[in-house]
Length: 303
Ligand SMILES: [Fe+2]
Ligand SMILES: [Fe+2]
Image (cartoon, rainbow, N blue to C red; front, top):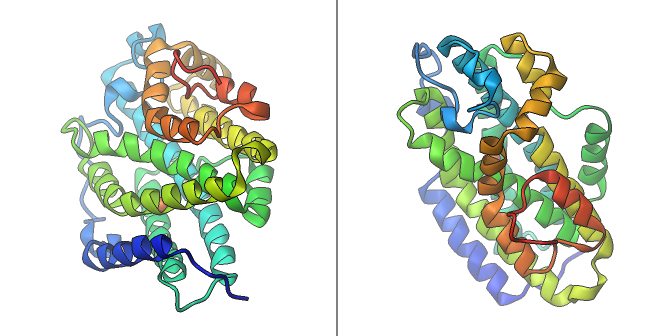
């Protein structure tokens, strides 16, 4: 089945295809996977650690703090792979409905190609870090499978954007921070360059879909979008990471949740995507409570 594509869709896709041809990276050759990790360097900027500034943090040695950030970056990458695997399934399903001669459809395939390389890159990084694999479990895992099989339209693009933009904000800072391990900086840099295209594609497509759907009929989408925000906000740092520094996961989770520095980090990481989604009136309705619980909203925004 083919669909008629609006011309602006294909104009954007043509530009993104050209940019992909010029700026795509193969992590297999760009990254020195054999290079040793650098002693004394953090794995996320220390002020972004979920426990930074808490009494627990003050009680840790420098080595323990670094060790915690090793697990935190593995958790972020584990969630990244998980979202990318969902995204690839969504995109291939959308592609199947489209005309393969259209640039918009071709860009969807190109983005899947990017995500294939990213997931290999994150997987290799996690293996190199030597941590457990931290990915959603239980009801979150089930919801991930459900959205991978059924996600369409605004809820699909908004859920993608939440994950992509939050990760992007964290990685833009990490790639420029000299306290951070070179491996993590390089992985972040490759991801940031390629994700800029994905964010553009998803933002424009979402805005087009909202214009044609009308703002009033998106209650179910708002609920799903709120749940995606909640998952991202609460599972970016998997509570199991605290075991790495000898803490009880629940104690660590509670301390992070109450930590004003980390609350600010989550608001900061969510800022761009929250502003974009609230301009489209996608934050609120039945998703309101989930957004508040996600920790991503600025104090001034009331969903
Ligand atoms: Fe990616
Ligand atoms: Fe992406």
